[in-house]
Image 1 (spheres, helix red, strand yellow):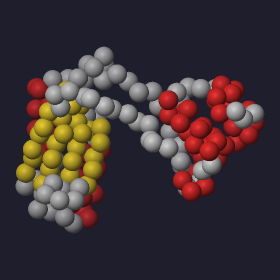
Image 2 (tube, helix red, strand yellow):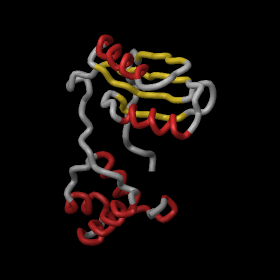
Image 3 (cartoon, one colour):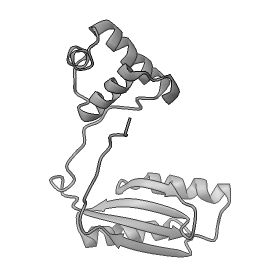
Image 4 (tube, one colour):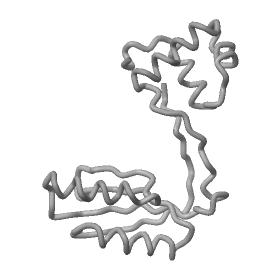
Length: 154
């Protein structure tokens, strides 16, 4: 299922689920003005197509003891597939990494990392640089999170 195949009802279902993934089919169908069975079939089709990738609980990171967010810019002189596969596997194994992006421009990779404190980030940093040949690492600490959402603008 692609975005071109989504009608107004599908978009309403997705918007409602992005706000509250715990809605029952009955609650969801009431919110979007559809009977239960057709609503369930639409949700099932979106899950099977991969449009709905998964449903998760969003945990408050400060209450979970991870108040520090760091954006880590990485540069490397290695750009071959073997190096990237090895590096990506090492980064994927690091639970502190919330996002991992290959970038255009002056930075090759960008990581969004969470930590309990500066010392926790330093331990992460030391593990990171042991796992890859990097030409440069730059860390920027978030002073304040002004907006954070997982909801896509449908």
